[in-house]
Length: 626
Image (tube, rainbow, N blue to C red; front, side, top):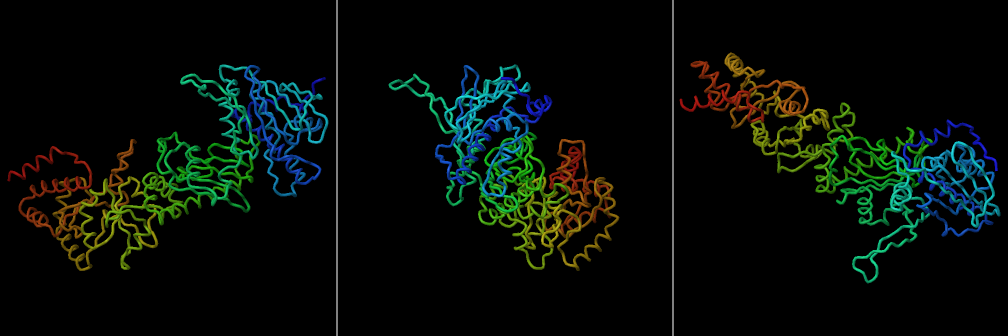
């Protein structure tokens, strides 16, 4: 029989199908299984609307077999089959989809879930095969036909023998090359892997012969190979089952098997949403960060399915960066896919799903914080940095979504509290939320600035993460309460009368402070303060850049170096204040030496290095021998 040319009559188009549209050769199996599923769906649907069609739905299924010696793969289904004209129209015309025609003809009817749409998935098989044979017998017909093609040169259609209705697709694989081993597809373990990866939730059983090694009877070390036909796919995905019928153990097993994490997740979010956009999702919040989470190699994203068929292994558009730790799957019939079903077209449906998922994750974390503090703190220890990143990223555009998920150590009882809990604890006359930053809780607790706030019974947030100050400055205010760093200048808890008295003492000592400032050479100002109780001195920040910011940014592996404007504050009630005033009158050189020691002391308290430790050691020794 003479070979027919494809109606598209374009060698370039066929070449595009095989070499450009599909970027991953292994998806040919997904496409052919999806087509087989569509064929069964069509027959199933017709049997519901046509009483003359008598089929045993329990026998519906897809069979896959491999002949390694002849390099042949066969995918068979017992679906509706194709007539000669349908073979001509569906396979002889590139981009003509029988599934799409079926959907159009029945678009006024509900519950039609046909996967195929564009009619090009079949041609993906030419990526791995140099010959394709399709034997098909339409349901109710006595005739069967075989469509054969070796690619661009065209195809033939001839009558053939086939006992049962349905379709058999036989691929003769290409020879292996240095770049690609097509023989991999002839191994049952590889085929089983691909079926589970892409088509595990096709609603009909996918059967394949699988080899197993077993000990021979009566032998301790001799094995024999047994070949058995097994159902490979799970068919009904966990996310489509009713939540009240699923046990926690099933969720944990699914999570472990799917995402290779053998610790139970902190939380499971199972959603079935209907409306303008319908979808099912099963999301997991891990209990710990994967080893590569904070590296550039980590890829965020949820597995995306359409009608149970895997479309994308990691769809990054479904979760924002600050929730990149979330694992899970999303399945929707309402997505607009591109021609190869590999890349999702940007559309409102995807954005709607992503927004819904984000809200559900936020709500789950808020509930966890409120109802299971132990679990939440475990989560926050692993992923708190990611939440903080979300707060200050993009100039704080998402801060209002995330600020209630933050927790910090409280100066009272050293327990973690949220901003809301802090505000709930506040006295009515307190107008600010106080915080302080440092390397560790113990070091912060000993800071001179902290002492007077404790004495006034003010709660302080202890911030030990390098991001904390950037995060809290980004938030700025919470429930009309200003977030205030107690290590910044002009933070004074004294009374108005005490402030006036302090202002007078600072004015009277102005010239002394100039001498001290000149001796130190690295401070914006020297002054007395009421903020200290027992400590003689402290360093505070002037301006927007704080001392803690200076430490953080200067520790980064970049050339950027910044310097906070520092103010040396001296406890006006400490004996050192009187000592300094006396030295100013009697021995200005000694005043300069003491000023340098006090400044070095204040730097060490703040966790800053001393620029000239040799000079400091000499100054201290000189004072000790006096």
